[in-house]
Length: 228
Ligand SMILES: *Cc1c(COP(=O)(O)O)cnc(C)c1O
Image 1 (cartoon, rainbow, N blue to C red):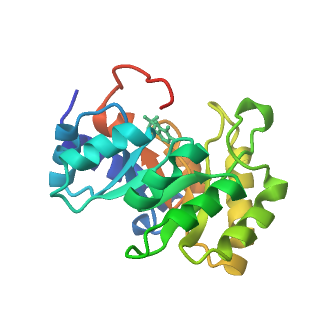
Image 2: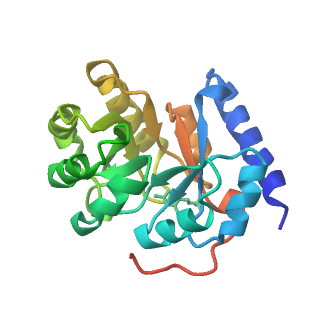
């Protein structure tokens, strides 16, 4: 396996190529390094190579890493499913949540966000693949949830997140991009979290502004943990 700095550089090259092919500015696509299952030492290597935004799936694992890396000015994103009994730690410790798909969870995050911190950045997770995934709100229900979140002062609605099923056709990415663009001006959105190691090109072609990259930066994950 190549080094993390080399991998990050290769990811940036892929992003730049995909952005140019789509007539987009490469700088309009952020990299979120998804570090789930990977040791804090690897996060530090990525940070030293210029990466400051990291995504984690499991709340407890993330809290452990935050404690070990407390000296670094990292931006933490929750990209895994969020149960309502875990919202307090998330409201207190994370900067972004990508997986809000219920008003109840949004309300708890807003209530539990400490007064001393700014608004928590949130994305509404959209389920465009029907039964394939149980996470995410149906496209028809996105507006209602977005409108509810927009009223919550301690949350800042930034946009949408989606995880197309493996091998999804390009039309799926377009559907998500169209949904995002349709809501941008009404809700002042600036973030479409779409695309992973294997499909970042398809996502960038349809307007992704944040790709969530694990394997292409850190290499293969050792094991898949049960949802914490
Ligand atoms: C693990 C994960 C990623 C990263 O996936 P790779 O294929 O390793 O790049 C991105 N998004 C979510 C929600 C994930 O759970």
